Length: 308
Image (cartoon, rainbow, N blue to C red; front, side):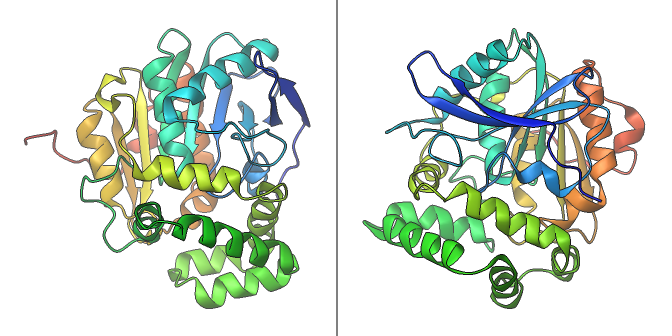
């Protein structure tokens, strides 16, 4: 059964913007800052049970309860995360990014080295123009940014669709037309699916700006160096993922040579998180303690290092 958040609120950032957040799990456990997917929000982690960690999910600018930040870039996000952690009394923390949240989690690991204890990248979007996008929905998303006006049009139409349908109808539309693998269709058919679309609805309730900014950011060169990440890192991906192809995990594994990689056969973009929730949390707990449990990745398929 899904567990609701412990609390949710907004934080006032130094520049006056509001940043929305929700907390899950154990408030006395090691803290993990969670970067949600696209287009989602702070409610996303509620699709699974969270225990053993203090998970703080933040709305990115323009999503949910967070004010927009015009022209934002990836490297701007770590400062927001650091300010949120300060407001919540958190000194050091692990970071986790799911899907479209992975680039933001990676930016934190690269640029907040003194505060980030570890990194988990879960079915994550990788840097552009590295050959991983082919055959996945992420490729279509990145292409939108390269066609003048298409991203804005898609965002407006997508928001109308998401907010114009009841959650059950929206879920049926996703299952019918989303071209999802069977593993994803199976986990989304019930309460998990309703939670996912409700997170979409909350993310877009104040407009499409957050999604528009993300589409631009994903497609453009990232303004930090992934290879600078030195903290313990775990990469999780399903080999049937057709939203973000598993080749993205290979890119991350080549760029972060010390990362441990766990590829799960038969799992998709959504089913990976649902079916391996406890394993992923175990790895989050482990990196929060500055090491990676070997049994978490005992069945990992590893990729050769860059140039290997």
